[in-house]
Amino acid sequence: MKWPNVSLEKIAQITMGQSPPGSTYNETGQGLPFFQGKAEFEDKYPVVKKWCSSPTRLAFQNDILLSVRAPVGPTNLAPCKCCIGRGLAAIRSFENLLNQDYLWFFLKKFESQLSRQGQGAIFSAINKKEIYNLKVPLPPPSEQLRILGILDQADRLRKLRAEADKKAERILPALFIKMFGDPATNPMGWPTKPLSKVCIEKPQYGANASAAEWTEGKPRYVRITDIQENGQLSPDGIVTLNLDNWEPYRLIEGDVLFARSGNTVGKTYLYQADDGLCAYAGYLIRFKPDINQIIPLYLFALTHTEYYKSWVEARKRVAGQPNINGQEYSSFSVLCPPVPLQQKFSSLLNHLNNNRKNRYECHARLETLFNSLLHRAFTGDLTVSWRQAHMKELLQEMELQAKALNN
Image (cartoon, rainbow, N blue to C red):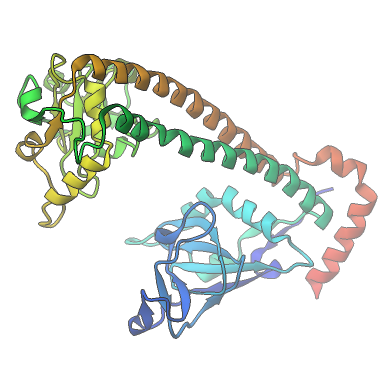
């Protein structure tokens, strides 16, 4: 039994967003929540940043909000009746044909495919016709529910894993405060020194060179975009530094990199041998801590405190884009607790980082499992045995679906 592939316009109501006059926007809660695009999306529901007093296009609670402009493909669910701008389309399935949650999972599965369909020289976008003609595999209602039961269980595991990871990430700042106190107030009275005075060399800027396709045996080119918010290197988009004389930019264990430009200014990365052969890019600045004064892992942890983040915000220069240079970073005031205490903290932190690696591996396995289930769900493989055991009932449901589609 093969499922029909049906155009989305035949099984769902689609509302293309339209931006109302700018004079109707507000941030004081007047009118309906107003969503403009992907920038407001979170895991499942968008966050309300603006309201609209005279909405033109509406979405309703649990409508699927599809990003149709820069980027194309991501989805969220409408948390309530709301106004949608031209960066979104609202999609609501016809209940007698298609389960809304089934459609949401389908759109999540085909997000990358939708993105590849996006057209436009400046902004990637997908138009009304392309959305209307999107083909959706349409199993009988009972089989849709069977698929949802399996996908919901897998998705729940992913969310539990993500919640546990968020809780674990809060351990680091709590441990820092417990051992050293709040750096902003320094209640333990630790001596302080400028960053330049606890490093063995002057700050060094990275290589201004191009990237090349990753080649085994050559250094990974570490760029600002490769550094994640937690300070770890991204496993994706690995490239090689395209430079013959790259040794001056070779990272050594304990080197700490600071981002100096753009929206990511202030971001830091601690190089460790496990990251392999690496060299760093020009928008990063290297500092080499003197281990007789500052343990590198302690310094890295200090740059993830609110004390450091506030310092960065206070020193951003806005001249086209934020920027903090090596001289300014050198002036950052570093708390200098006794080295043995820093070493104890680093030992505990290494233990936490090992646990983090285990969590990431678990997360990766769950993502692989979920993506495999999504693929099998919409090819029919996931429920093949169940389908064979319920063939008679499903054929009857398909007849009713066909009549509803013709109507």
